[in-house]
Image (cartoon, rainbow, N blue to C red; front, side, top):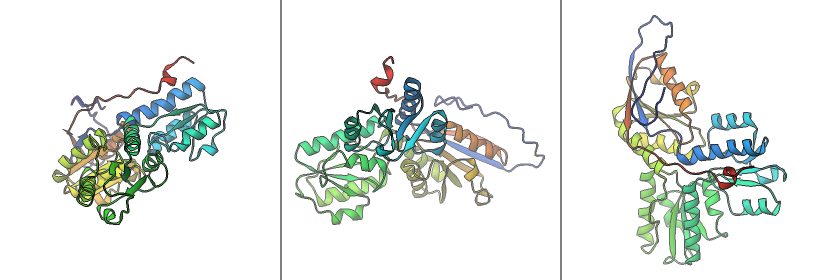
Length: 335
């Protein structure tokens, strides 16, 4: 059972009934891993909304990108929709942790809906940065992934044309800003630290006067999880990242592991997705989880390895996290 980040871990012996000698495996577990404060807050928002108003509570988009989490909330009475038009006026609606364009709460208010915004506070910080730059007369360049809910929500804080999107360093050459001397940049919070640094360098080279954030927009949890993977990747034969295919921060962890020297780095949603033939002969394995993957899925994967290997678990702790975000006031008030 996982006891948190204190370093005190107890891994129970699992009787499999298999008399065959199992090959040894050193499993290096990354810390931090799994839920970040923003994800934990978003899940609590939906649970508290269900307690306060009863089911059903509508949630615009997956509250976080993890099927296991979403299915668990669905069983409790949450109904997930992709558009506000799919939610009735007379039931509460929750906006996902990724954030939404300003037009979404505007529409909810127009319809007199009860709504709760579960946007991660670190994403909200980027929204406010975009607004400040706009008020200062600067056109904003956003470094992010086209079509990702967070990117859509952040770009939707400003009028059309006020935010230009770049996904790669090569995109910088094709930018056509209104005034090259009046620019600022912001970033999606779940990007690769190294890739983003390359894009920022390209922006500064072409637009020397560009204004950047006082503190990097990539969130602490993304940074810490990537640093842990960087430390583990060169030391293991393979590395698995537990996370959903549509989870940006989870996919970045796979890329970071490969760039750091682990050729076999794969994303799995849960134990059933592990490609066991591909791991034949592996004697050392790294294991981490994206910021929206719960610890129960990590335990499930470790158990699956214990059934096939004589596992020795090591912990590599890159940082300790004690961040906690309060839920919105409406959920802390008495009914």
